[in-house]
Structure formats: C-alpha cells, structure tokens
Length: 122
Image (cartoon, rainbow, N blue to C red; front, side, top):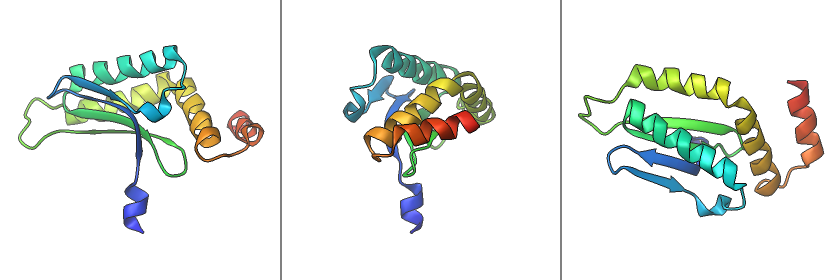
C-alpha cells in the first residue's frame, strides 16, 4: 500500500548534473506554450538550486513537485529548494490547476464540469 502512495507520474523534469530536460511524451497534447513554460520552470529551478527537479502527478491527479540531490552534492541548496517550490506554487497556481484538470479529465476520465466547480469553490 505504501508503495502506491509514493507512485508518481512524471510530467517533466530537469537534471543539473546531466544538463538535461525531460518531458513525458504522454503529455505531448498539452499546448506548446504550456510545455515551454514547464521547461523554463524546470531548467531555471535546477540552474538556481541544483540537483534534480521533477513535476508530476499523484495517483489522484494532484500536481506534485519534487527535488533531490545526489549524495555528496555540496552545492545543492536544500533550503532554497523548499522556498522556490512554495514560490512556484503561488506564482504558477493557475497553470498547476489547469494541469490538474487536464490530467484528471484525460487520464482519470473525470467529468470536467465537476472539476471546474471544485476549483471555483476554492
């Protein structure tokens, strides 16, 4: 059961060690401007903080951001990573809500009208 709770679907990510960006091809139907925004977000995160940064979804469809460093990486900014994730959540709230709706409709086959109602109530 615990393994299921840790299960994530990765949408995209950036790796400061390999200087690479990854975008999950299952999401290629997202609009180009959204894909570009995600790439910019991920790459700037790892440029500033270091390590590996991913944006994905929980099994329930909530957006989750994770960051980690390789063992012995003294340049990785652990405190800065938490602060930057909070900042991104606040500044990019609209895009994250849109991604959650997209994921829940496309992959979890939930009713879009119900989801929009839920977000309007928040």
